[in-house]
Length: 182
Image 1 (tube, rainbow, N blue to C red):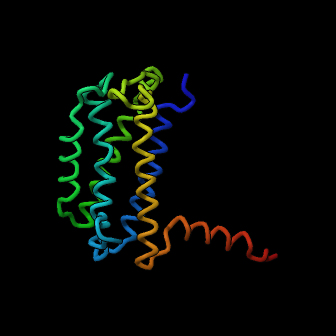
Image 2: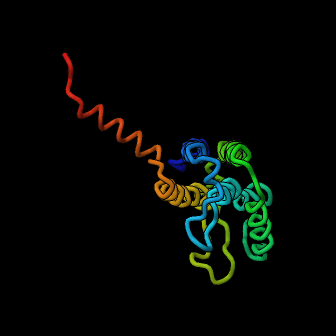
Image 3: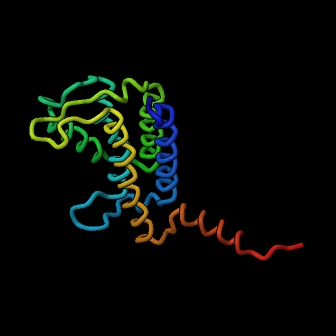
């Protein structure tokens, strides 16, 4: 029995994606071409990368339901995803992609069973550990998004935006320290 079910995975992923979409909305469209430094993704590319990143695990787990990654063609999939994230998109198109891909992933997660999440998948030869549970593998999508969301929050600061989670915390603190009126 898992203590973290498919429904829990879906709910927590939806929360993470909701916060990513708030950031995508907060950043003005004229900043979607902002590149924080040479060799990094633009804001638009980073958001597209986030929107498409689930595709890797979706292919492995939902489409192919692989029991081993031995022989999986990683380079082809990564090249396809890299090309797709570089496609020019408007802010509205990026936000739509975040919404639709996020719901596709969360909808699939929601139906996962404990048995499926507990299955082990063999990694390619030489990998450590030699196998992982499907739970670990599907959880990596959320972890990956949170990693990049941290980058987006720093980018917000660079372009003069206070991140929404900071604004919300500041508002809660202002209420907590405000004098009580009788």
